[in-house]
Structure formats: C-alpha cells, structure tokens
Image (tube, rainbow, N blue to C red; front, side, top):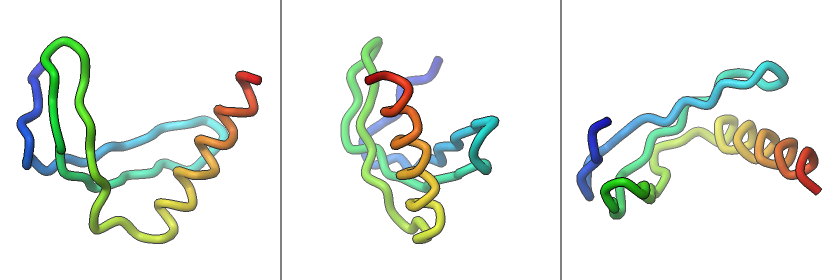
Length: 64
C-alpha cells in the first residue's frame, strides 16, 4: 500500500449496505508509515457530510 504524502488530495469513499455511498474529498494533513494518516475534509457537500454523520452514528450504536 502506498503511504500518502502531506498536502496530497484524496477521495474517501464509504460503502455501507444500510446507507448510500458517500465520497468525501480531503487533503492529507500528516502520515505515519505503517500506522495511518489524518485528513482534513474540504470541498465536501452538506449532503455528503450529513451522510457521513449518519453512518458514524449508526456505527456508534453498534458498539455501545
């Protein structure tokens, strides 16, 4: 797997059987090889952010 570089733009797509597909556009803030990376969402529609929030709420409900 490639390690993203800070400043790089990326698209994150979330697939779920219970929710519509959500694609969010982001910029990589920092990256640690083998651990992961952080992003800042940008240029994302209100609907996409709402869908993400609903998806995360649903996940939180599955793991009390």
